[in-house]
Amino acid sequence: MTRITLLGKPGCHLCDDARAVVERVAGDLGVGWEERDITRSPDDLARYWEMIPVVLVDGVQQGYWRIDEARLRAALA
Image (cartoon, rainbow, N blue to C red):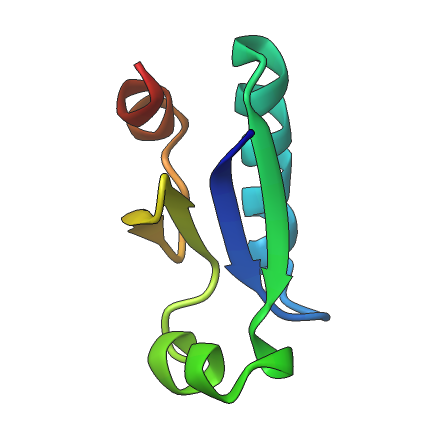
């Protein structure tokens, strides 16, 4: 079951940093996650272009730009 969604785009260094946080937290807590490329969806592109990376937990936005590991863990608790 996917609980975390990371929204980003190719070539985004902040997205690379966020991916590392998401991978670590998801692995530690045993939760599923997915990554979505906003350039593949006109809706995602319009909504998130200036915010990436964005992390959603169960569809609710938990952070953007710099992903805080403690906040992500708390959202999953």
